[in-house]
Amino acid sequence: MNHPAVDTVAAIVFAIALLHTFSARHFERLSHRFPRHAGLLHLLGEVEVVFGFWAIVLVLLLAFVVGPAAAIDYAESRNYTEPLFVFVVMVVAGSGPVLTAVRSLVDTAAARLPLPRALAVTWLGLGVVPLSGSLVTEPAAMTIAALTLAPLVFRRDVPERIKYLALGVLFVNISIGGTLTSYAAPPVLMVASAWNWDSAFMLQTFGWKAAAAVMLNATVATWLMRRSLRSDPMAAAPLPQPPLAVVMVHLAVLAMIVMLAHHPVAFLALFLLFLGFTQAYERHQSPLLVREALLVAFFLAGLVVLGGLQAWWLRPIVESLEPVALFFGALTLTAVTDNAALTYLGSLIPGISDEAKYMLVAGAVAGGGLTVIANAPNPAGVALLRRGFADESIGAGGLLLGALGPTVVAAAALLLL
Image (cartoon, rainbow, N blue to C red; front, side, top):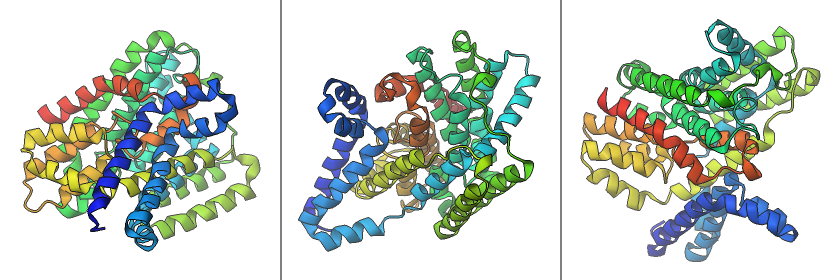
C-alpha cells in the first residue's frame, strides 16, 4: 500500500469509526423515534458492528484508490487469528456445562466468605475471575465474568452509574488480570516472543502488581455497590445440570482451545467437533452464544483491517517518547486503538530499552478498560451485558467515566510499585 492517498483515507475512515463508536447509543435512540428505519438505525447502533462496517467501507474505498485486486490483497493479508479465537472461546466458555462448573466453584467460594452471598459473588466476579484470565485467556475470563455478574449487577433495576462502575472495573481488571502469564493478554502476547518474556518474568515483573490492583478495584467497587446488590445469585435462571462427563468434555475442549490459541486451523477443527458434541447431547446444553460471538469477531476483524493502516502516525509517536512519557502516551493511545496493536508497533522499534519495553506494555494494559476498542475482550463484555443498560446500549462516555478510577489504580500499581 504505497499509494500516497491510502494513509489519508485510512486515517479518515478510522477517525469516523471512532466517532461512530462514541455515538452508537444515539443511533439506538433514533431507532425508537423513527420506527420506519428502525432496522438500519439499530444496526448502526450496535457497537460490535461499527468497526466491521467501516472496515468494509475502507476496503471499498481502497478498491477505488489502488484497485480491487490490491484492496482484496490487503484484506487477505491481515491476521485474523485473534477474532477467530475470541469467537470460538466465547462460545465454548459461555456454554451451559462450563458455566455450571464455574458457578459451582464461585458459589462454594462465596459460601466461605464472611459476606452476603450477592456481595461475595460480585467480588469474586470482579476480582478472582479476571485473574483467572492469566490461565484461560482474557476473552474466556471476560465471558465467564460477564455471565456471572449479569444477573446480579447488570439488571434494569440497578442504577446506571452502578452498572458503568462495575463495567469499568471489569474491563480494567480483565486487561491487567491477564498479565500473570505471557500468553493470555493480547498486548503481552504481541511482544513476549520478540522480547523473550516468559510467564516467570511476567509474574515477577507485572503479575503481583496487577493482582494487587485487581483485588483493590474489586473490593472498592463491591463496597460502593453494596446497597444495589440485594438479590441472591441463585435467583437467576437455573442452568441445566449436565452429567459430570459432559462437563469434563466441555472443560477439556476449552483447555485444548486455549493451548491451540495461535493455531486457527487446529482450534477451528476442534470447535467443529465441539459443535457436533453439543448437538449429540443437546438435552444437556443451554443455547450457545453464537450470535454474540459472531458480532464480537466481526468487530475485532474490522479493527484488524482498520488498524493495519494506522502505523504511519502511531509508530512515530511511540518511538519519540521517553520511558515515563511512553507509559502515559500508551495509556492514552490505548483508548483510541487496540492495545495489542500498540505493543506490536513497539516490538518493531530497534534497540528499545528494557525500561521503555516495560512502560509501553504497562501503559497499554492499564488503559485497556477505557473504551470498547482498547482491549480485545471488551467487545465480548459489551455483547453479553448491554441488554442490562438503558436502550440496550452502552455509552462510550459512561464506560470512560466508570473506568477512570480503576484505571488510576492500575496505572499507579504498575508505575509505582
